[in-house]
Every structure is written in structure tokens, then in C-alpha cells.
Length: 127
Image 1: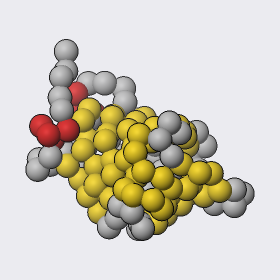
Image 2: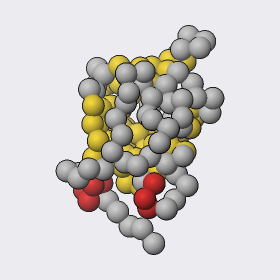
Image 3: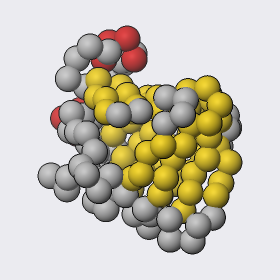
Image 4: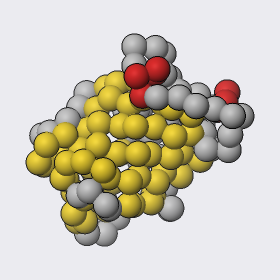
């Protein structure tokens, strides 16, 4: 059984960050699960251009407001508490935090190691 808190991860190698975001990687590949689970904060005013070519990602918003832009179609989706979105086609996208910090519970398949940061194209390495 694994029991962990965000406080347990803060300040360790599992606490990753980059321009406009930070993430506590609560469950990672070495935990032996088929998914990684992260508590992520996108800072108000941040705009992240992302494209997870090697991973599927699902996000559940529990705080803040923002928007998700599908770069393939131009469609814009509002993100607010209670919204879940899944990038089921390795969708290139933009995520914006527009009102308060956007706080998300995220999962990645295959699971991340926990120390990754985004490459220039907004992806994580296949590893």
C-alpha cells in the first residue's frame, strides 16, 4: 500500500517545475503502478504549449479557471473546478490559467519517472 501527501513530495526530486508551473509527482514509475499521478499548479497568467507525443494525460481541475485550446481544431474549452479533460490522441494543446492558479490532478500513461520537465516541443521523453 502506498500512502503519500503532497507535503511529502515538496522539496524532493519528485517536485518538478518549469516556467509557469510546478508539480508534485505523487505516484511515479518506480512505485510499480501503470500510471503516474501528479498534483499540478499552473500559475495565473501562464500559457503552456504542450504536446505529449509519448504519453496519454488525463486532468481533473479542482481549483482556478482557465482554458484549453485544441491546436488541431482551434476549439477552446473552459476549464474550471469539476472539469476533466483527457488528451486521448496525443493532442497538441495550449493550457492557460486565467483566474487564479489552475490546480489539477493529473495522470500519465505510461507513468513518468517523476523528474521530467518539458522539452522544447512541450513533450516528455519516451524513456
